[in-house]
Length: 189
Length: 211
Image (cartoon, rainbow over all chains, first blue to last red; front, side):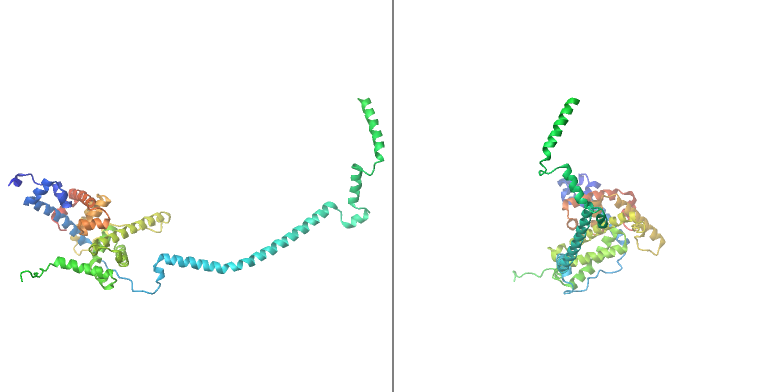
């Protein structure tokens, strides 16, 4: 009796009731249970949303083809259904190919070693020619003409500059000259 | 005699639910025939669901095919037989997300190559051709109003609203399909209801109920 005099549910309450009736405040839920008008209003609003959905569904086209399952292939390409297994097999294949290629490597090493050695010989030959030229730039025919070797001349020159210890008799004379020069120096000073 | 159990009255809803779970169980056991019956039962719903989110018939058909192939491949992982429908919708939602991810990537590439034009979804070419031109115009107008109304909703509100009233899923099924709690779904649904109800463009269609 009292419920009839209570205020009816507003639109917000109705929408809340459609979304989640159980979480309405207790009084409102109680009113909704007892008030036929409010229940009808709620039902009409909910039906409106469902009618809207139905109208939208009517606009949807039908699929032109039905989904099909792939034909059964139980044994065929079993392992490639599992990506991890396929990856492992691929890695193994790569390793096997690598293993097959490895024996060719020493051959390439030998070839490169021979090449390096011949290059070394060439270099040594070139260096020996260069050192020969620095010792005596004149060709051999010219050395015959000048009748003495270039190295001999150089030895004499070095002997002149730095006398060896065997030339001892020269020393007193040198000393005499030195004394004379000192005197002169003293005079000059 | 009094203790004898009375024959259980026939309940078509319960019976079909049991039959459905049996079908799912058989499909889970690897029966292609049972799974084909599930395809017969759900493929139009899934197609429609995908179509309303993508807008292209061909893409929707391809995605529907993918959804059922994936479902068949992974049905062994389904724990509760009664959750099959929500599980199927969840697969469909994930496939739609993948589709949009790929589409974004394609549109990014199309910036660099103008030849690869990305197909735009036009809501105008959604509806089935109607022989009556007046009906055709009304349908087009309705679809435009509905699309505008849906654009005013947030992503989650729109998804919940569509699943509830277009795809006719229950709150629990929506929560399972979206991997959200039921209270979250209810909150989004309430917000969506408020916005759709206030939409003036849709009011005439909403009250009339028919198009």
